[in-house]
Length: 253
Ligand code: ADP
Ligand code: MG
Image (cartoon, rainbow, N blue to C red; front, top):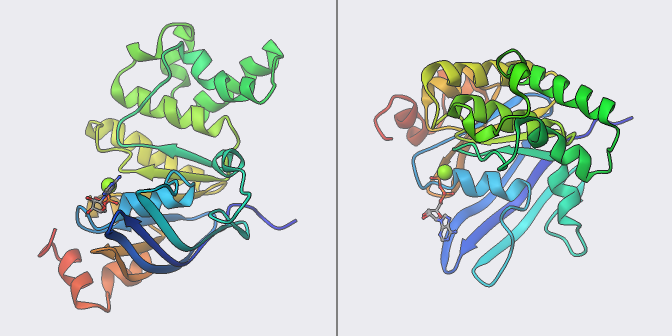
């Protein structure tokens, strides 16, 4: 059976009103690796990430042209079931947004929504994904207390566990450590490095050192254009474009 979690972008352009945020982007995201999207603020990183799970929903103000193919399906095509597309992807945003309920219920929420009612099975799911997110030891004695009582770093790991519990193939992270202290950031980075065995991971970061620690593959965006992309070593050690060189050297930020 062919593995799942393929993303391929073809001639993608995105417009907010008259402003073009992404300009004719074509790229294939490698499977089961960590792809990092880098580039200065406002260059379109978040827009590109959102385009992958249709969080960018075409409307009066948002226009999308070109294609985003997820497992071969054009997710901006007609008759696409958006919830099915989103189920393939777990999303971590800049700040964690736990649901206003207990730690346990945050994780059980998705599986319950998909019909799981067996308490024993839910217990096992909750334990499994809290372990995967490396949060279990810290919360096992207080599973039924509100998620909002956790530290921000713990909440981000909870959100990771919640996302994974729905069974995605792809993990998207938009500067997922930007609200976290260094130790919590390290925690999350370590999880990503483990999870790439099983998931295709795409992370936006403006922290170059983090990009170097995580990336197998790099996309460098500048003013809405994909200037350069390739294996991390190539982009960091031997960038081809002048503008990439300047960004990597920290001349522009
Ligand atoms: P980055 O994540 O690299 O900082 P974004 O993708 O957030 O960049 O933004 C790219 C450009 O699109 C910016 O000029 C930003 O102001 C604009 N933009 C982003 N989101 C919206 C929106 N919802 N409506 C209008 N303009 C937007
Ligand atoms: Mg952004």
